Length: 575
Image (cartoon, rainbow, N blue to C red; front, side, top):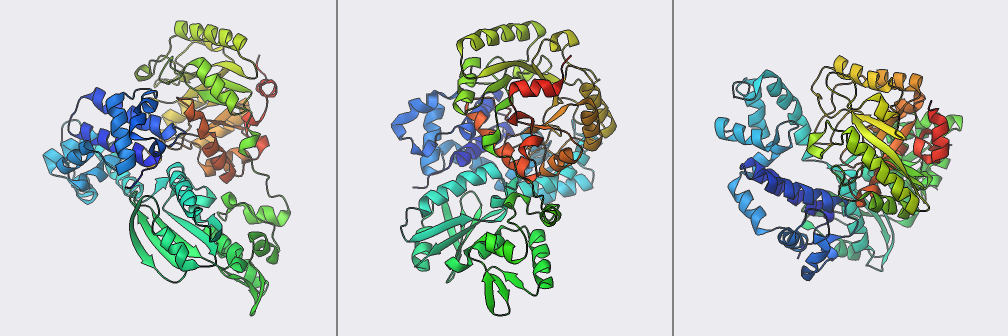
């Protein structure tokens, strides 16, 4: 029977929630499935490793009762549950694509489906372009325009998945393929290896004596939907998740060349081939050649050295600055996960987190960190049970008590303060002055003009008690486009005020993106990689943020939380 990864289980739970909301089900029931999806995707244990009688293990996760735990186990081991199949039979499959349109949501999608008969993205586009959508109650011209703008993003979301989910699939495939003793080497290439935030397919390279035996084993991969094609050295399969995986069996003397070629990016390889041509060489997936003579290709280092270049980290291979750096001998030593000393953005059960202050501290200590900032929401975020000044001070007193008990890690008294729609912050300067660490965020008024949102953020950064601007564009990959903001203007103010921008490491955010990370580095703005963890397992997301930072060319010196808390305090120069 097919077994699902945690990401696939979470996606199925999200689909159940979407379909229930589409049908107008009880909001609490819908929320239960969404919360369960979040808990599963952040959980470090593999659900499919549990047996049917192990439901008690799942009920220890927040918000998962016995009934839901049983559904999750059935999902993990069979690929579906009766409830999901029943809901799918009641809602046309094409309608599901509408649920991915940013800003639309299941309720509005249901209105469009029932009142306008819209069933596909193409029909939705036509309804917007003919201005039929704006005529519906609760929509209007602005919403119609936003839906039209989000249709392309929804189409793309159906074709690509976020890196973290692709990683779960990739690791599952590696585990399966390594069970075959005849395989000598296995390497993933493509956008996955470059750490691109979304992945359209997976490219797997293998060195083995018997290629046909490798392909036979590949045909039994976990999550297999069908074999798309099979030849002498290449085989393509499609997984139930919709992801295509291409396997290539290559000779060992060509592995480095194939790894470089299929890692890409296309733009990087075009530059590389141009450089080869000027040297009288030819480079392809088989090696580097001078005429018929192979002069490199067993390793990637050989490929780059043959072209007069140092090895370039896969995350940098986007034909941006990497060749200029290489020519000048100043390729950056990219930040790594082992450089991280602590996390400056985490939530607890005082607001919308699921773990206590002490549980979060112990989990951070287990990761080898020396500090963790507790930054629960301020009062404006009512849906998250945001903290008033009184509750925040009470939390800080509790942090003091926990700090007295714990050794080897320090908890910082922080807050994620809201930047209000009309300007200003959700808490007074008097309260913020008492905090160790303050991050400011935009949660409301995200549809305001570029000028208005930028002005709100600039004012917040000019507040002497704000240290960091978190998830700076508000995007959710494939679900919500960034709000309008002049990020360069914000960065210039951050540089002048000695403030920090966050790279939110949640796999659906990765906000800042890689291009913005590079811009922050050029403008001299430090970046704090924060997990925005709402559970102990959520702290593991730090590695996604580090990967994104590497794509932006960031070194340890460019990242604030590679420093000790004592060093950070000196940098902040608090009055």
